[in-house]
Amino acid sequence: MARTDETHLDDLRDAYPDAQPDRSERPDEPGRPAPRGRRGRRGRAPAPQAAPLAPLELARYCWRQLTSMRTALFLLMLLAVAAVPGSTFPQQNNDPAGVARWLDEHPTAGPWVERLQGFHVYSSVWFSAIYLLLFISLIGCVVPRVGVHARALRSQPPRTPARLDRLPEHRAAHLDAEPERVLRAARSVLRGRRFRVQVREEAGGGSVAAERGHHRETGNLLFHLSLVGLLVSVASSSLFSYSGQRLVVEGQTMVGTTFDSFTSGVGADPSDVPPFSMRLDSMDVAFEAQQTSQIGEPRRFAANVTLTDGPGEEARTETIRVNHPARVGGTQLSLSGNGYAPVVVVRDGSGNVVQDGATPFLPQTGNYDSTGVVKVPDALDAAGEPVQIGLQGVFLPSATVGADGNPVSGFPDLANPVLVMQAFTGDLGLDDGVPQNVYELDGTGLTQVLDAQGRPFAIQLAPGESVDLPGGLGSVSFEGVKRYASIDVRRTPGQTPALVFSLLATTGLVLSLFLPRRRAWVRVRPAAGGGSDVVVAGLARGDDAGLAFEVDGVLHRLRAAAGAAGAAAPAGAAASPPPAPVGDDGDEHDGEARGAGGRGADEARAGARTEEGR
Image 1 (cartoon, rainbow, N blue to C red):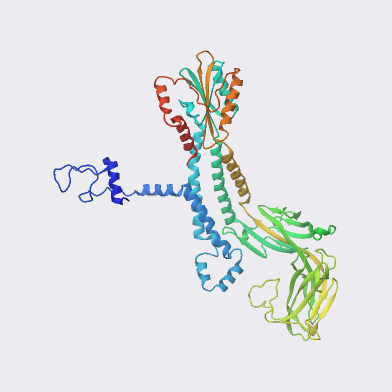
Image 2 (cartoon, rainbow, N blue to C red):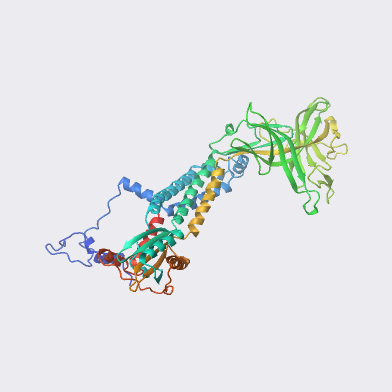
């Protein structure tokens, strides 16, 4: 029959009568002592209530909860969950155009996501709060353990238990050497096996206590401290890093204040970029042309530049390669891409040059089939009327005819360069004040130029060729080809510390997983017929398959070091230890050996838990 809550409380009161309220009389029977035992609810005095926590006690309780390992693991999991919206919604600092597009496509949900900082996840209040709490929790977990471990490193090995035969692994042997000689040999053997050793004198003999494996906890602390350092490094990178991209054509110069795109953390802006200047002298690019199976694969990719660290500084030449950036202070200049920039000259209907320069075309395939546009907003037709011209086309570095009959590039290098374009007139949209992609042509408001037969006018030019546009719009000339490089200017202040802390965390994890924590004792007593009776025992923290080999190795080396041979008891057999010393010290040690496994083993395990636990 199931007990009610009230019945269960009565049983608890029966078990702990001293904790009941002090009542000498029942309220309904004056003068009669209140019997102990189970009583009904009527006449019972109210149970004492716990006093409310003082402000300092409440703060201490909250601090203990925050710095517990359970809370740290929960916050770590919560941080991973909080990062999910950052990959679900476009982020303002990385993709502002994507944010605007998402708001247009979701007019109802968009404002709510914006209020909840869904487009600024990693700098939001709630993400920063989780990150900060995790940081505080880890520090609160680790710092107290450092002090405990430092004291444990300076402490002496635990005293020898009275009943070594009750430890998990123990061996007994008789040696012909004198006890003093055996003790010296035991100290030497244990030190040789990297134990911390202390020799203790006992009535009728002596013992050696040894301990090793403290660096297992050192590795554990190193792992957690490195994790804190890694969090700091990632936070500093997020706050103070920046990245800018610039496309530079051969012969052009870029400075550290102009970028095609720029992103940064909340603690950085374009003014933090060093005032360097870089001129792209030439591109050194080569592709595989011999092996049929790998034809067209890149073999060399480098940019020869002239770099100046700042105004008035001496210029120097650098070669930027993949994974070998140039450096200006703590800023890296990396090579992230390359392509071709056809030199196109456009003359309007009045014969004026309205476009002259290299226009970058973006590669679309491995053979560098590249697309691009030329925008001419200030041209005049043959009648002198203003007209805007747009040219859109494809550049083929090694033109050939594809299987479908259309021109394609058959090789990424310049073997047969051809420029294929179409012309448009109308409003290019450059006067509207709306930002446009310089590599795309918006067809809204544009009319395609037709030939005399009413078909789209096609422009196909080789270097040095020119063609006249219909309707007196002017002419287009293809003067040659230049290469360009995509330069990535980046600074991540926490990158190197993050690598260092990651390596330290790995080292600490290896130490904490594979370094065994062991204790060993050797007790030596004079034998009745001469020589010494020796007991070797070991204890490990947790399961340790190598503990038995450790004890056997200590005994084997001890017999060799003592210079005497004796008969050892079978491995794992219960040894007959010498009688415990008499007197106060003997009684104390005998008391330690009581219970399953002996209090000596229990105290050794408890000591390990105290030193390695939080």
